[in-house]
Every structure is written in C-alpha cells, then in structure tokens.
Length: 184
Image (tube, rainbow, N blue to C red):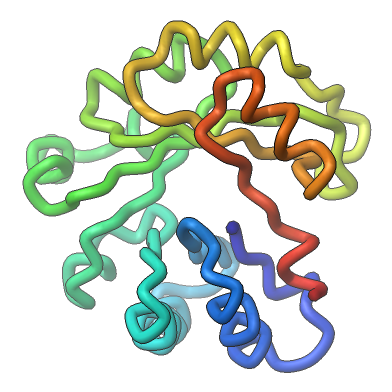
C-alpha cells in the first residue's frame, strides 16, 4: 500500500490505523510534498502504528530520516537511486534490510537489482486517475519483467481487487494499491 494523504477524507493517521487493521503486506509512506521535518514527525507516528500491527513500513527516499528513526526499509525511485552520493550508495545495503525501487522498464529493473533492490514496484500497469492520459503498460509487460527479475515484483497503477489476481497470474508477487486504501 502506498500513502497519499490528499485522497483521505478526514484524519490521515486515523485512516492509516484503519488500514493497519487489515494488515497489508507493507506500507510505503510516500508524502513526497512534505518538508523533511514534517515527514520525520509523521514517519515516527506511522512507524509506531505499523510496528504494533506487525506491518513493515518503507520510508520514501528519505534515507537519513529512516536511519535516524531506525527504519530498515527504504523505497527509492530510479532518479533518486541514480543520484545517490557515494556514501549513501555504499551504505544502502548496509543500512537497509529491504530496498524497494520503482521501475518502469527492464533497464530500471537491472539497475535496481544491481544496486541491491530486494523488491521492485513496477508501473504503471493500468491507466489510473492519478496519472490520467498515461497509458498502462499492461499484463504482458508484467509477465516480461517478472520472467527476468530475480526479486519479487509488485505491480502498481490501477490495481484493485479485481485486477490483483490478474497481475499475480502474470508473475507479480502482489500489487500496490493507493486510492482504495486511502478511501476505505
């Protein structure tokens, strides 16, 4: 599950507590628009809620914050991965148990795996409201990537309860949902 507080009607933390009760595979705390100070405060609260629920949390790109908070899971985009300083590139696999990377091509997947990714978030599979006009890559894309990727692949982009079995039949370990969980 990937967060987006803009989709929540009501209190964001209350919504995340509801989501924790259904025990998703993991949560990626996205909230890219927050300044570091606000993100860190939010992350500390979310980590507490999800530790209690036994659900892993991945902080999104904020490696220093993750290190300060003792979060051993990080999610990175390919541009962030490419722009890592030598210090953080060397520390990536030392500081984090789980490294999730958003990928959009086989080249992205190869770079992510070479850099130590333990899972891939592959998108955009189906057209979504949050990326209107961007054509989904489809199930054949999922099949191709999964057949050639040594780590678990999670599909993102238009994934819902009906489409989840389809992406899993195509080889994905699961799917990432955003709007469904943010509005439940």
